[in-house]
Image (cartoon, rainbow, N blue to C red; front, side, top):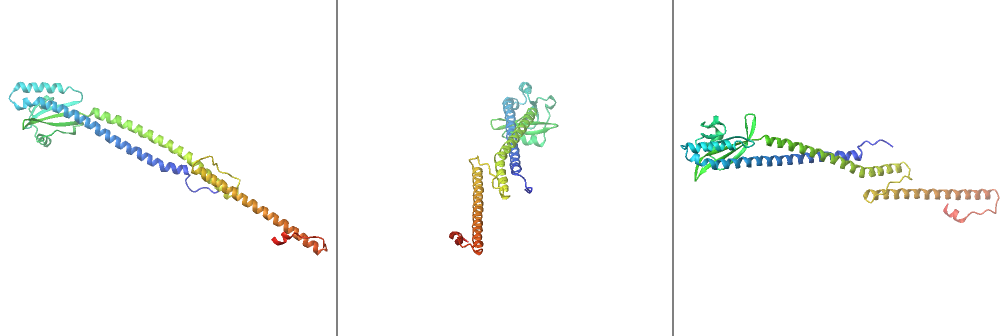
Length: 288
């Protein structure tokens, strides 16, 4: 039997299904990771905005009456208490001119911020949140406008550390990588099962057909299946039996023909030798 110059069916099935499985697994990884990151980021932004709205409500009196020291001191104490919450990096209250009226960082109190992000934030009428890099650290920054009636008194800025968010991302990445590994392992097992369940019977059919081509018509395929492969095996076995019967019938006819020819020759030889008593069968003469 010549060597096959192609990959076996099992290898083909593995090569066909494995890349698709890997692609699907990493596609799911990217989708789930992106969705979870968005969810975690949104959760942190909601906490930051909620804290900002609370502080904005506390800041209205101090910003509306900037000359009242008692109100400013009270606001500063409230900021100090809120800044003790877990994950809070900094809190600050700015008036409409960009001057820091209260802050969890004492060095910032009284300073005037005139940078582009601050000017944009002071012109906001809605809450704005986003991740910003402050030095080597990343923070969730929320700018919450402080309004009284129709006037804009300033803004509240909330800085939340993203350490917890980063840790959650790392944990999520490890879990998803583990899930991808499980999916790929399961896909390999499933592919192996499919290759064994369908590949082996098909290879058996190919081997039986090859044996029949070599003249070994007694070879039979395994037809103990109730699917298309079992049907093909049954038809192949019936074909082998039919060919065997044709060959046997042809051999029988050939043998009978030779016997008749031999009998006729014996009759002719007897006649030539003077044997007038011998007779040939009429059916032998007709057929020959």
